[in-house]
Amino acid sequence: MTSKRTDSCPTRGGWRAERGSAAPALELIVITPALILLVLFGIAAGRASTGTSRVQQAAAAAARAATQHNTPDQATFAANQVATDSLAEAGVDCRQLHITVDTTGFATPPGQPAHITVTVHCVVAWSDLALPGWPGSHDVTAAGVSPLDAERETP
Image 1 (tube, rainbow, N blue to C red):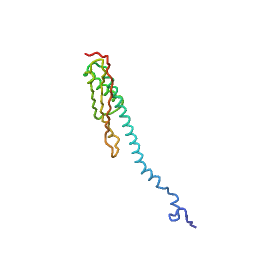
Image 2: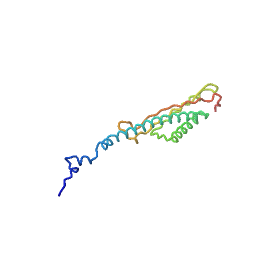
Image 3: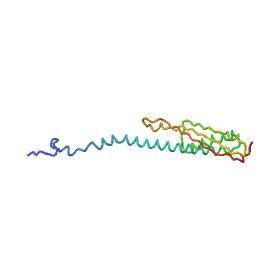
């Protein structure tokens, strides 16, 4: 005697009951790129914030270093060196780095207030993130100001 199995017949729901749903796999395929983009946007925002903060710190440190010297040339050299070293130690990778040192404060006679201003412009790279629609870099500019000693000696 032969018996028919009703649970394995495709028309009676046997196979349908044993199959899994494709919905979770499809949802994962749709959601994964969105989650990756969300993470990349977070990284880009973090880099922008961190890059801005570190460039500001480098400008302030460079201005302080410049005021410790007696001549504009020495101050400019020291400011450039400190800003470059500070950014390198902080891990900021500048595609382009422009450091401007305003040493006109050295022309002010001793006894009068004067200051040195250092402006640091850094183009921070974002191209490694490969975010669609975003630029490959971010411009960050910061200025640091430090007073010259009013009782300084002139060379």
